[in-house]
View 1 (tube, one colour):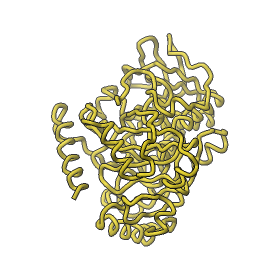
View 2 (spheres, rainbow, N blue to C red):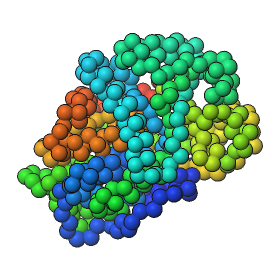
View 3 (cartoon, rainbow, N blue to C red):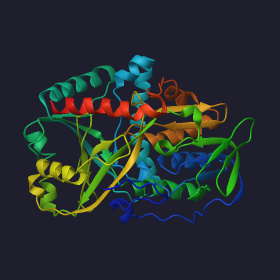
View 4 (cartoon, rainbow, N blue to C red):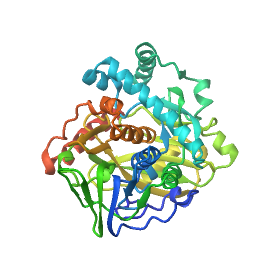
Length: 431
């Protein structure tokens, strides 16, 4: 299994089951002008483009590969309230009131996902229900504490504690001691969702150029110019939504995010009986380990299973064997089930695992670093970026106020230090 580095999406189950077609998206050639130039064709960029166009802005979107090339078209497809970090981290940085604001906006991001799917008729198999499953006794205690804290401090009451028969009604595995069911979480086909946003953006007037990597952003006084190998876009505002694929485009953001590779497999379609002996209610699930496993069923009843992580750009040793063995331990009923697809891709993480929103100067905005929790939040980020460009930045600035440190170690030691830290947490997962 390899992580694709070229301009085309990997040969994933998602890419093999595309149900949304776009208008032509030729690479940029020559000069173009727009009110806003967006760099990146994932959920963040496509959502921002759509919301800006609906406000009346002219928008050009540049994507280095294909729409949904990054995590937006490769992920586990889970849409969940919350962030990639604990709310305690946000509380310590911004206080309880702002943490509550961010929590409520994360819930809004899930509702927005549903609204966009319905409004634009996006065929992406949206399904509700999510379980966070405990593997060890300490995980059970942590889930109890989390449920109580969310009810008491955040007035959130959509979670139900599961154990015994109530747990097996949702996941038929001996691997888990308990779980929290969240009625506000769910899952979808991420690539079809992203393509659906891009199609809606095109219908609203957005011009999309695939295979048009931004190689330089000329800043200073307005307007700003975004340069590609064969053209340039002159715009009053720029939105940078490249996330894990930012590279060195904006030196000021160097070290604020790190790339982490995740890996996913898709089985052959399961019979109704087999599917019912895995996830009877068709929920999404992830476990409570630091390096977690996550999975769900696709619209045609394949098990979409994700796990393992790499921070050094190399595929983990014996990856295929290890992932297949994990599935077999979780679900002995799937013995002999064929794996039809294997793929991987990068996500962007921050030091504190909270998303990194901000602006450079007065007219370059960015959103990045969802730390594996961006499928719904990125859609809201697009709306908030649109609001901020239109002069209504209050809610964007709640996220932008979150302090972020650069990864320690400088250019050469950042990845080795992160690998060492992750190995510590992997060991802790096993204890």
